[in-house]
Length: 504
Ligand code: AHR
Image 1 (cartoon, rainbow, N blue to C red):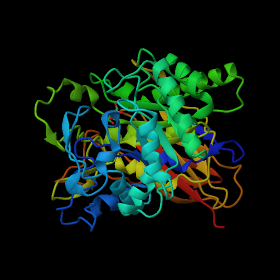
Image 2 (cartoon, rainbow, N blue to C red):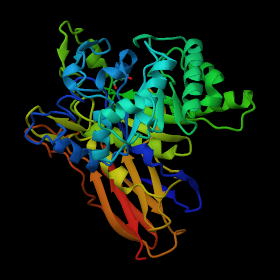
Image 3 (cartoon, rainbow, N blue to C red):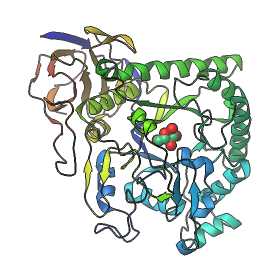
C-alpha cells in the first residue's frame, strides 16, 4: 500500500483555530431565504416563520457567522425596504438574479434568525448603487443604541437593543462586470475607504472587509487588491477572497486537488497585501475574509437560458453534491485551517438550497447534503491551535495544478483538553494510502477517541429527498495508535478526521 507520513510538534503552532473559519452565507437568492430559512406556512415553522428543521441543521453544522444579505443581490438592495410592517414593504426587481424580492425578510428578521441559530451576523452594505450615506444609515439602524431617528425606528420595530454587528463587508465583488454598479479598482478603493472612514467615525471598533477579487482567474486579480488596499489599507481589516470549484470536462484529478488552488490564492493575496503594507510603511497586517467558497457547478448554471419571468424565490442553483464534492469541501477546510494565521474569517456559500450543505423542500423535509458532513465534523472537532503539518506523500500530476500531493492533511491541538485531531484527504482515485503520524512529542497518554471517514464505492453517490442519508461519515475501519504513532488507512477519494484524546 502507498504511504504518507508526518510528525507533529505541539510547539509548531500556525495560529489559533478561528471560530469564524466556520462561517456561512445567506443571500436573497433563489430559495435560500424564502422556503430556506423562512417559510411561515411550513408545518415546522416557528412563531416568526423560521423553519425549525433548518435552524436545527444550521446549529448541527456548527456555523459560527453568517454573511447577509448578499452576494450580487446586495449591490441593488435598499435595506430600508425590509423593515417595518410587512404589508407596507415594497416588491422590487432583483436584477442580480432576475427575481422578485418581496422584502418579507429584512435585517430585523435576519438578526432574529441569527439569534436563534446562535450565529454572528456579517452584514454587507450596498456599494453598487449606493454609497457612504446608506451604509451609515443601516449601521445607525442596526448598531446605534437609541435616541436617533434610525435607532428609534429599530426600537419601534421591536428591537430595543442594538444588534452589535461587528463585521461589515464594504460591498460585494465590485471587480466583476456582472455586478450592479461595477467599478474600477480605483473607483471602488476610494469609495471603500470613504465608507470605512465614515463607519469608523460612527463606531471605531468595527471590523471592515474590502472586496478583493471575485476569483483568482479575474484579469484584474492582484492589481485589484493592490489598488484597493493602497486607498483603504489604514481603514479596513480584511480583504475578501471568493473561490468556487467544479470538475471541468471530466478532469477529476484536478478537481480533487482544488485546495492547491485555494492555497495559492491565499498566499498570493497575503503577499499582495503585505507588499502594499510595506510600501505604506505600515505595521498593520490585513487579514483575509474568504467570505465565499464552495463547490459550485458554475458552468452548468452559466449554460442555462437566462430567465425571462420575474419569479419570487425561484429554484436557482440547487446543486446536488456527491462524495467527491464532499472530499473537496473537506480539503478546502483543511486549506483554510492551514492558513489560520491570515485567513481569520470564511463563509461557505451558501447555507440552504443554493449551492448549500442543507436542502429544504417547500412544505417538506430538510436534509444534509454530502458536503454537510466534513463541514460539521471539522467545525465540531477543530479546537485550540492549528499545527504545522508537513507531509511526506506520493504525488500525481494534474492538468490544472501541476504536480500535487496525493494526501493532504492538517492537525489541531487543544492544549486545554490535550486533544489532537488530524484531518486528511486521499485524492487518489484507485488506491488507499496509509497515513502515519508521529505523535511522540505530545505529553500525556494519547488514545484513539474517535475516527470518521467519508468515502464510498460510488463517488457519485448523493443524498436526496428519497435517500437523505445515503452518504454519511462512518467509523474509520483501519486506524490504530501504538507507541505514539497513529496509522490510518485513507480509502481512495476520501476525507477523514481522527481525534486522539488524553486521559486527563
Ligand atoms: O454565491 C453566489 C454568488 O456568487 C454571489 O451572489 C456572488 O457574490 C458570487 O459571484
